[in-house]
Length: 490
Image (cartoon, rainbow, N blue to C red; front, side, top):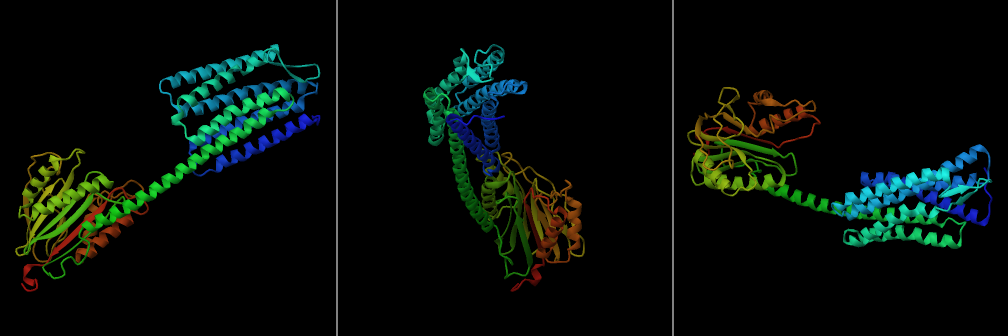
């Protein structure tokens, strides 16, 4: 196939080459855009594919013109049909973008149906025109010429264009200024190109106008997406900073300086919390109620993240304040429960194990509000599960009653309390760590100090979980009662 290199054809070839180059580069840019949403990528990949097809078909038609062999006669009709058909899909795809952004509500579905009907009529008209020459035809030299009904081939484009202009004007407040400008350029530039072609019939200004305005539209949307991504990153950085501060604040509210009571030798206590998220819903606490009584708390708030952390702070303060008034564990949980239930619109709750240890007698009074069973090791014995009574969770129902029970801790006895994140730690196969493994780990380290016991349990859990993600907070506390007789100054 050869092409007569007249001035108009040369200009057209340059326009087509520029169009193919711009579309090709834009297509590559779409595929490599790391921060471009998938739906935006798919849209513009299809959009530039259609434009490339439209330009390529026009180039093939130019190459086939003037050749009268059967292959070129059939081929030029096929590529011309595709060229006209693709032009309809191009305006339809643009119309969908404008319709999506305008979001006119219920009328949007109706408008889309009208667009589809127009596209079907356009396609049917092209099929008919293939056999009638109504839109376009070819003379005996196989040269393209417009038919008497050529204006009708643009009816769909004009109607969709009019609808798009209406949407841009009617719903202008929904369009970003940069995007609105790019859309107006895409809608108006081809019209200006058509006007130019009235005076320069052989030069395809429409091709260059379509490609340039499509590229401007694409880069406007990408710029908007980039700015949005940058804003999201700034917001993410701000939130990360705030979460980091919240993590530090939460950690500072828990006793985290050890040894906790260096002036005392009658007990040794150690605790740790590893949140699954930046901030967790678990908490532990221990505090001297008076010179001879130690309060010990282990709790787990429903949920995770900031809401759980806020509820945790309120619960922790209430438990300590009410316990410091000298209430026994059952009374403490009862008062805290009623306080939380009185103002709990989010219906959050917390499981709590609270114990009060008499440091002179070794009597530990405790109550359990739906929390995990504690592990206890008396002097000369092994760690065992204490299957204490589980009362209702705190914050779940106002007026709930709680029951205290007692444990005698002899000198050398140890108590281990924890949240469900320990036995429910899960490995990559979906297997739970479980209570049996926990008891075994405790027995392996039962002769060690509370700190060493917690470190050993944590190592065993991490070795079990390996690379699997942590789904729940890991919170543990261990206390060893050494007896009042060895307390300094006692």
